[in-house]
Length: 101
Image 1 (cartoon, rainbow, N blue to C red):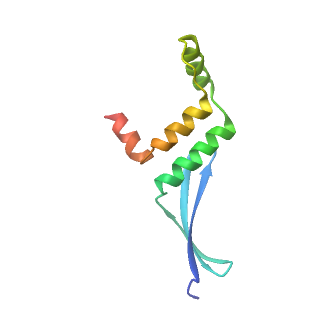
Image 2: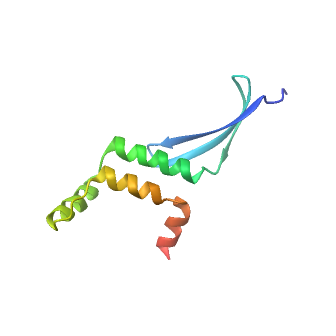
Image 3: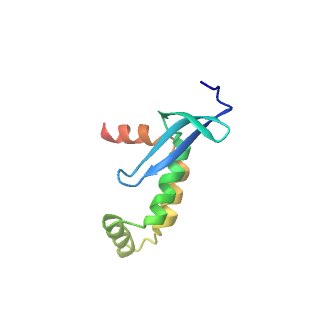
């Protein structure tokens, strides 16, 4: 088998699952030799999820929260809130497990 000329890590958004997956790809020039799952980079996850949310827009439960904030006299823009939250994300996996405690 040929030795790889380079290795890429590719992150992809799985729309059906709402999750980011990562694969490491061994390549010989443009030819893929092997592909295997790896843990996604937390920064890439945050960026990709932010872009997916902005592209999709708020779900009904998000719209309700934004309406409640407006009713309470608090100005809130969903896109701005998502970007601010993204700036604070360190590790989505760790954040999720901390909330479950």
